[in-house]
Image (cartoon, rainbow, N blue to C red):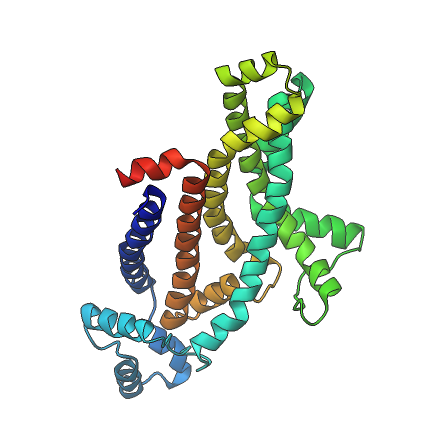
Length: 319
């Protein structure tokens, strides 16, 4: 077994207990949310008899251990459960909501990388004014809250310029142009902060590589500066950049919950917020589980990519 293959197998095996622990945490945290979901669901019909009957149907009259075993067993069988308010299948709800969240997160990260990496490289090799401008962007991007930036963008592009819709969503398969028009503001809102973090990491990583002795050797050989930066420095800085992208993707998924609510996007984030207000245990559990599982999978892929970019990582992990 090669070191890289052993590294991949080890990382995948380590993901299994992480998913198990995460499911326990999600299950227990949801139980700490104040309020009785059965009383919320029944409303004015919340008599003692009706509450007891519904709690029995939902299994809420069992102890936590039994509830968890029933829930995790159903998940392993592919049964995500049913929304206790709308009585819709949670599998169908996720199939409708996840593409919206993935589109928002994917486009935001692509834009953040497209902005952060080139500016980070430019900041590492540029002069004083370039460094100051990029440092100003980093400070603003890190400091400005996503929800405040989203509101300001709506006021500018909708209220003042009247060129973009303030909220709503059109599926890409229905109308690609309208889909992009509705996605521009939420994607830009999320991408600015992520681009700042990626810029900062790229600048630091590339600057560190450019200070290495082998770069001085390449310059002495007369290698063109552009080839040194993009062919050697950026490649060696790749693992650090990929790592921060994977980490920030988790932050982006958390921010997507707020942004989906702000821009009325029918994604998993908005589904979770609505379910929390309704004390809808099954929907909140499955929604949070889907977001957390996505982040864990992205973290796994990040580890594998870093191991591929830097063989020292996979060699060290397999020894």
